[in-house]
Length: 371
Image 1: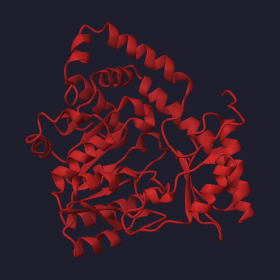
Image 2: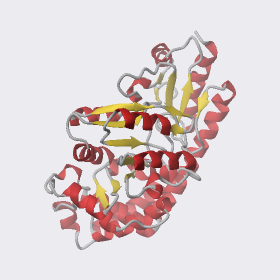
Image 3: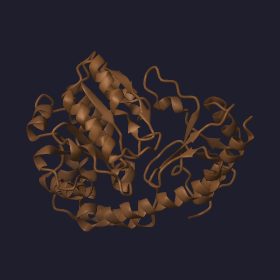
């Protein structure tokens, strides 16, 4: 990798698929294939809706890597991204004024999407194994929940990996209370030895989401949704056939389907996993000895326990003065939850390994200084 500008600020805020050598070559081939296809005009000038039959067949074959078996095309949609899909799911599963549950620290967009849908998000306690099933059950007893949103594989932001046993217990609670599960498996394909998703344990309850943002590229603006049943998916779609904001972009669908069919998608995922592992090795080298870092080998970021007397805002300001940009952890907190003693640091946002080392070196010095 090339060396970046040693004087430029190092942004450690965002997580996305890292750049890998094969990506450009594979995408160029897919773009050429799309340009030469006889249906190019239709691809650009017409709606792709939620994917063609070919798109869904390719997707089902690819997703079997996580689900163990290809999902039925009658349960599968190709959509315009995770957030668009969550907006639709929230609006259809949770009427205005209703409540959903989510990990007390969760994907930063959840609170914003819930606000747009005029629903509330109730926090579920978490530990090193992710969402606690006993806390979820307590919420189910106290509230009439419309759904639970959960990110069990490479949890954002804590990086926890929910065990199979915990997934089974969470599924049992959801089944007991007939609670729909919205599972965000965005890290599933880039995570080594990940337990099976909840969609494999409780398929009749789970709305499964897999975005390509971390395993191919966020600019493709594409995600897959697998519904609990064909009838459930039909019910979701029936009242909103003309809401095109969550339709998959036609060109993105053509590119992704070609990448899958050619085997390039799997090759890219493999390279991304290797790059993540290399950056995790650097993080371990730079921060591991401090005993403050929580992560897993497949995570795009690390979750840092700030030693006393550091709290988030002074640490962020101190890092900024030394040229490192961090996000306040409050963006991951559900309403009423205070998080001041942790920082999420992206290992992917720095463009080169050298930039990553420089950024982590700044953090290491600050963590040791404790002033």
